Image 1 (cartoon, rainbow, N blue to C red):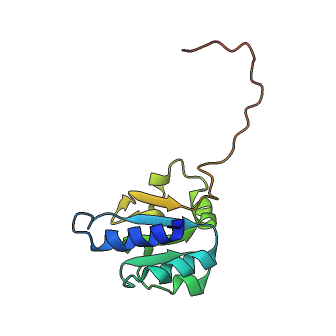
Image 2 (image 1 turned 180 degrees about the vertical axis):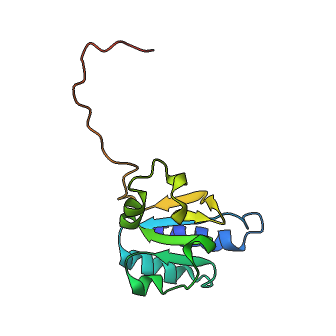
Length: 130
């Protein structure tokens, strides 16, 4: 089973699960066309999801506001843009559902977990802190 197929099956099962009725998901993909394709393939009711991208056609797949949709589809570029200046993901309310950070966040494999930082001026004689 491919990753996209697994993601779609997970979202479909989550939406019908009585045990998971309050779980909210952020799906972050690398390209807008991938967002459009998966949002359509999942086959959700338009009230269950929202799309947050720079593309009006993609966003129009659902009229549900992002903060009111259990599933939010977006792009890595949108996450990066909204996270500028935020210390933690949880503080960026644009990705919240019902006033809380989304518990499940699925990103495709091209997304880096954070900015790459290269240490400079590292002393080779640094003390061992173990």
